[in-house]
Length: 375
Image (cartoon, rainbow, N blue to C red):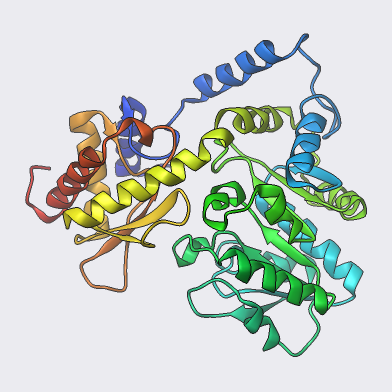
């Protein structure tokens, strides 16, 4: 049962008429109507649902993503966790080694309850510990064989930071020199394109396999697509079944993914450019601090001099007073006493704001949280 504050928070978000971050919130019915409208607008007939991942919309999405990423094949998965576990297990089986190289802040180690080890008997090997992207020089320090190497683009838990293009290419070459399969966690791959200065397929070419999320920049409710060689994708489909992801129908996720490719993918460069403009205005104001400077994707961290709990309450009271929903992802206390941090995601909703408006909103949240404004 939800706590009284959680219920109040949900009610404030539901009643909000304006969003600050991301693509804005949607109700369940509104989301389903948008998907149904898109099917009718783009299809000559209303197709039957797919049968366990085979059929209209699902197959279309897989073909589209494979082509966009320059890979022979692709498979739709209900989640990115499932997609990546399928990829790494398949690479490990091929290589004969159960060791998987990764960053200490990798999604696998931070968010997945040690699933690689518990479900697949794979052993994570930390290749990089400092809060920066993995480099070829890090791989050189790992003496033993690896079943696969994975990198996250961008590295979310170090502030959405990216390697340079040359650094990423050098890491890819170093992995191939050692015959280590190189898997790219590209949940935000297209958001990384402007900083890396190369297209999505050029980035994907550096990896033996790559996964993209359908619910981050592409705005879907769930889902992921794994792309790579034909035989790897065939194995991944079997792992989807073993994981219980071979649902009777996957078409709602596929439709949302195809819609996102047309609605949001062409806008991503604009989101990244505006993230840099907004972050610059925030830093210049002195109201808050951002990281990295400048942002490398459409997402950056914003730091306010106030306790996280008080800021999360302020987000709700501000929404109740103004109808503006600002931070769907909570603030968290940092290692610096008195300072809290939240992710700021620039999406379609953010484009409707002026940088000065955003600065004033942050000032209001800070003042509410520190007693400088009515709550």
